Length: 100
Image (cartoon, rainbow, N blue to C red):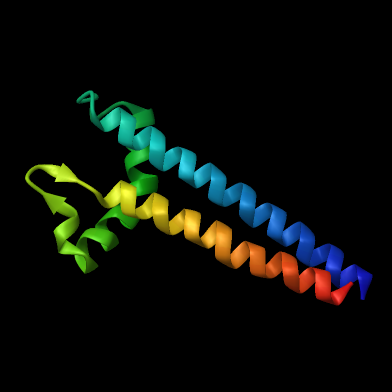
């Protein structure tokens, strides 16, 4: 059983790292959007390609997140990612503790 627990622990660590990395990407994309960057810059294009699909879904299902020229989709996404990190990953950690 300890092998399964170790595999699940490694999986939780990888998911936690990926979520933190994506939260950083969302934060940087939000900061870059304040400065009217060159849309043909490869870094700006990469940030948009990584974040716009998630922002688009949030804007689609929660149309009130864009109000008076201010887009709150990044904030909503950061809150959702934080919730997933706290609730889901903590539940997985506790499940691993039960297996051991």
